[in-house]
Each structure stands twice: as C-alpha cells, then as structure tokens.
Image (cartoon, rainbow, N blue to C red; front, side, top):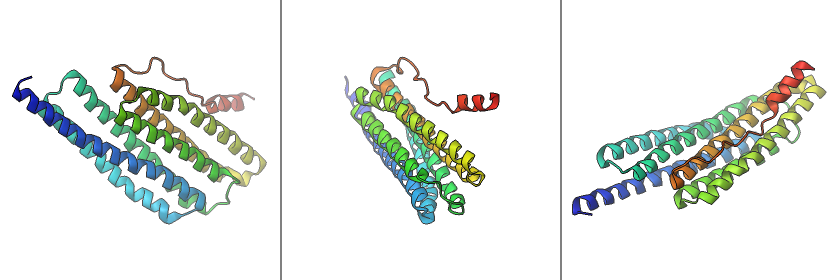
Length: 241
C-alpha cells in the first residue's frame, strides 16, 4: 500500500469511528425513549410523555447527520466494496433507529388520551415489560454491530418471536376485556395500538440485527422468519363466525 492509499484508509477509519460514535449515541437515545414512553404509560406521567415527544427531534436530527456523513464518506473516500457495505449498513441501521423513535413518540402521544379513561387491569405493566424486552434486544443488536458479533445478532433475530407472542397474548386479553364490558372498548383500542407499535419496534430491531449479519457475512439471514402474529387470523375467524 502506497502512502496515498494509507492516507485514504486512515481517513476512512477516522470517519467511520465518528459515524459509529454517532450511531451509538442515537441508539442510546432510542433505548431511553422506549423505556420512558412505557414508564409514562404505566405511571400516567404526562411530563415524561412530553419529554419523549420532544426528544424525538434530536433522534431525527442525528439520522439526518448520519446520512450526510455517510454520503460525504462515499463521495470523498471512494470506499472499497467491503467498506461500502459498512456505510450502507450504518444508513439502514440509522433509518430503523429513527423509525423506532417515531414509534416511541406514538406511544407517548396516547398517554394523554388514556389518562382520561379508566385503566385496564395489568395492561400497562405488561406493555412496559414488552417494551423493556425490545429495549434489551436493541441494546444487544447495537452491541453486535460494534463487536461484529454474528451470533449475538442472530440471537436477537430469534428473540423477536417472544415479542410476537407477548403481543398476541395482549391482543386476546384486550378482546376479552372489550367483550366483558363495552366501556372497555375505547381504552382497549388505544392499548392495542400501543401494543402493535411495540411489536413493530421489535421488527425494526430485527432489521438492525439482520444488517449486522449482512455486514459480517455479506449475506442476509438465509430465511425470512415467519411472524408469529395471529391477530389477522383471529380477525378472519371473528368475521366468519
């Protein structure tokens, strides 16, 4: 490698370090948004819910900066195929993080509505546990990215089935509450929306983990995992019965 190539390589490494530091900062903010939104729901803390909504602007700004930095690196450094894979993975990971942040903001938006309604026994605490599991998955997915740990990334992908199952359990519980008392219909509809958003967070975390597998191996995971969401089939059964 001549001196010019060494300079380009070291410059790329410095750029990549900066990008990775920013993606971890963004990931930390998103993890906190998940936890805070769920806590606000359980404790009916409107101030905390408002904080989640306000902090989403910072997450959005970080994604914009990451995309700008990634585009600049591609333009200036002419990365090799392997290095280009790193940059593309960063852009995809940041897009998924931004979407998870939006979903956390959606949870926070429902807080004010639910505060004016009777609570559904145990629902908020179950949703908080579900959100906590998603946050742990996200932390592990980001750790897998930094460590280039394919095994940990695949473990995160496998764990998404647990989130799906928790969502399905909540969906059925909400149906039961609605059937028992029509006054539960409106709050349960809002709670179902929240549960679905948390389940979708899990999907985006899975996409991040899949990007790690792609980054390490050059290939996406062999087979798309079948979703364990039975709510669509439940809906079909209810319309035919």
